[in-house]
Length: 243
Image (tube, rainbow, N blue to C red):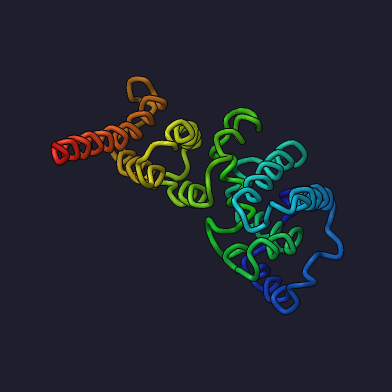
């Protein structure tokens, strides 16, 4: 099935230009099997999500919902895996031949989101976001991701590191972010990811005493403890001022 998908960047560019000419009518007339079933499932999910007038397509909530469905269906019914997910050819095909109208409704005629962006192809980005955050079940994954925003999504995907994504590590970072997200540290997630990128040049997380969980815990503590000291100092000076 997947081995039959051949979709070069030149083909993608040509198809994008066709869509660009008449974007309002870009829904495919016919999708080749077995991807027709995938389209049916996701389009129905889109309609179900937007049936609630309070929910919007241009939202993180929509990305999270569609990402979870895409992740589940591709895994269970299409034998999708990391190796396939790393090939932009697959995502270009899905974006332009199976879901062009869905991508257009979400982002307009943004070539980065259709096929050009290495980490910006929309379907690719929401699949990897779920994969890098997966907690064993869909319910547990939703629980740690539901209060995030598009900023966390893009930050996670943009900081893969020189050796690529380390899935076990990113999943632990996401798990502990849920625990620490309510702290008052500004841009905590961004700071932790930057520190992690720097430390990976010198430290192998799995070799740290306590393993990956302890390594990630130390990343958060670096900022949480520092911010706590600042707060204590501010409180001390505030009290002195009052006296």
